[in-house]
Image (tube, rainbow, N blue to C red; front, top):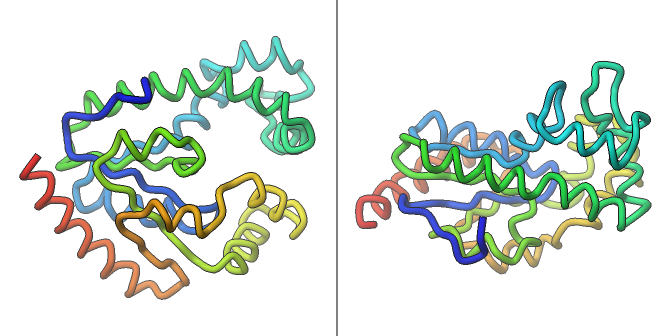
Length: 208
């Protein structure tokens, strides 16, 4: 998508650091009727078995970064791009245009009350804030991010910290937020926040 491109429907950009609980919150909005478009899920589909991005990834990076089934070996690629910034740029040059195309297509065909884009690197992109009507940040203490990702992905503390270091700081995310949901494992509080914001977004969508 072009930097100046916006959407006809009312739209929300949902972001947060790794392990903050973006998917949990997005799923709740989807259940309430939002059209959720997850750029991370799109990336996973593009790099899965038979994914559109796999021929280019194989050509540039070689078979050592593929699983035996032909999908992207995420662990191997994660280690590679974190140690080699030029490799990360190469991977992004393959994926980002494809993700943009798929995101645009899903937004055009969406039938929900409003659009919600899950964009892990929304803050870092510097462009998404101008494309959406509001930015929603899912926030939690960094110590909680660390413990969640270590448990979920079976990674060492150093490996998780390395991932977190490539992302925007907690302060930078909060600085661009129109709305914040604190996901510190207080389930009721998260549920209540989602319901409250859903009602707000419905009201704003009706005015657009």
